Amino acid sequence: MSEEPSRKLAVLLHADVIGSTALVQLNETIAHDRIQDAFQRFSQTITRHNGTTQEIRGDALVAEFSRASDAVTAALEFQSANTIHNEAISDEIRPKLRVGVAMGEVVIADNTVTGEGIVLAQRLEQLAEAGCVCVQGAVYETMPKRLPFDCENLGERELKGFNEPVRVYAVTQKAVSKTDGEKIAPEIDSQPTSEKDDLALPDKPSIAVLPFSNISGGQEQDYLADGITEEIITTLSRVSKLFVIARTSTLVYKDRAVDIREVGREQGVQYVLEGSVRSGSQQVRVTGQLIDATTGRHLWGQRYDREVDDIFALQDDVTKEIVSALQVELTEGEQAHIAAQGTRNVEAWQLTFEGRDLVHEHHKDTVQKGRFLLEQAIRLDENYALAWGALAEAYWKEARNEGWSTSPERSLELSIESSDHAIKLDPKNAGILAMRSVIMTTLRDFDGALALAERALREAHSDANAIALAAITLYVCGKAEEALKQTKLAMRHCPRYPPWYLLMLGRCHWMLGQNEEAIAASRSAITADPLLYQPYVVLAEVYAEADQVSEARKVAENILRIEPNFSLLAYLRGLPLRDPEMEDRRRTALKKAGLPD
Image (cartoon, rainbow, N blue to C red; front, side, top):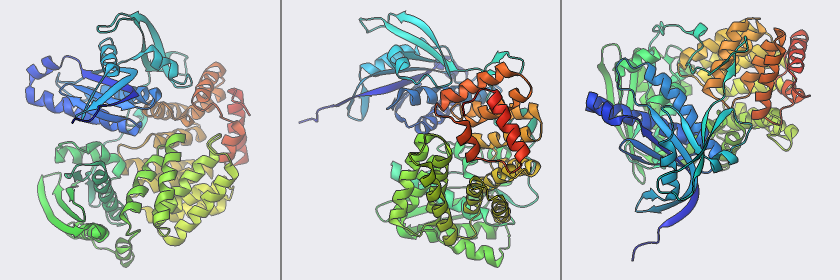
């Protein structure tokens, strides 16, 4: 007797490639590869926004979400990124997608998702223009109006297969205002124009580690492969004579067939490590190979068969083999640090990496989810320094953002306790030291914060996130030029850097009175993450100081749409500036922009 199909209500996203037949006729192989690459990139974006890709059907993709806002945000983020991606392609085989989002019932049977909701999403998608998103009226009604979206009412439409007309809205990213008041659509750029430089090879051996392939299948094994990749990058980053690219930057290559030479050019490195992970119930097989990206020559390759509990020693072995292949000498301290193991509990290890990634996204929901996972990890291993360090960051973000915690004072106390415990467990961890320095700025212990930030930078070597965190402390302490220098260094170690690095550029340029650069960096940060409110704060400061009050007030409206609980007092208290004159300058500008106390 067959099982009864499962039914549920959900938010459904349907996307397809416009003119896929014409693309295939130009070159079937290239078109197929690029369409699949577009769907894989879209799928990664969907995952980041709490969605699930259910199916990829030839030239179409189906995904499911719990919240309409997540579905629309993911769609718009991908469409913007895909436009930039396609502009870099020299030929005409450029897959452009259109997207529809609807709410409705789905039926799950035989690993296939069907139902009226998917059909409606598909019909809506057919109304969308290339690079755009169309949503059902019910979806529009449930989206918070604070989100930075422009919604055009297309009226009621007769849709094939539906008896009643459906109200349709076209949704686009809200425009950002230029200094002259002209509304323009923000441009996604991996870097502000003024900051772009050719990625010349560093003066020491440089390496990018590609995400290790999970050839076992299954999400749990995926976390295992990601964790092994991260551990190898982290360990290599501790070697002072190596230049290592951050995992955030190489994550874009996950589940993609890549040209190693192209990776080398894009990341600005000479060497690339790639590998795979196959795991069973208690066994794991890891293979790795080191390639010279400038010549394509294989320098080293190895296969390891280990017990799952022995993967930590395996990572140390891989690192030592790579260092040896690159003919790099380790100091005694580096040898000891490579051998140090954070935890031997695989579950705690996986929870920590998943939780830390969520905390780094800088949004209330993801930070809270990340904190929950990190608390679970610590229950499994209370001596895991990395988990304590990431937990300290989560508590700090909840303490300094208005409305994120029921007791900001208690959250700050927990942040201090967690970071102190993390440093006690791993006193040479640059990321933990840098995070503690940022927490100390909130306490207005500027001398102590600066000393810790400098200590973190001495230990960081290639740790992009630690370098960027230390730059926050330098900025707060009034050392804007040094903070700018360190932020750019973090960007070099992470060419595909997170939006908050751009935020730091904007803050530093504002402090230095470099308004055009501050605007460019802040606009790029907003484009990369439309729900990040802090870059709007920088824009408000710049416009208010330039006596463009109407522009400053428009920016302030965006801040309050994204963060309705925004309080000027809480914002200034959460990231205080050491220089009283600079603090007064910031407060005056933001009050002039009309932000509430």
